[in-house]
Image: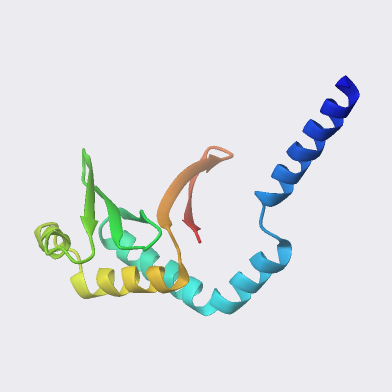
Length: 136
């Protein structure tokens, strides 16, 4: 009886493991179908980040809640907005962001289901380097 329970449990864990992963075909198709948009998002984010550091996050399944980190000289501010609220535009104006460029970036992230974009710093052979990280 213990062996039967062991085999059933092992089978269930195996099924669970396979159900939680994306197939390679899905991943390849996603990047192939969205390659132009993703490259555009990366390039525009890099240009905007060079002017004023920030990070963007789309927080919910409907992609209508936005999280934004705004980096200043000494503090990192974290805000949360809904896309239908005027507070996002007010905040972008307050911190002197290019409102149209950020809005276009958010729209493209929503279209491509890109949920997070940020600039990470790391060190390689004592040299500081940067990496734009986004997660579709």
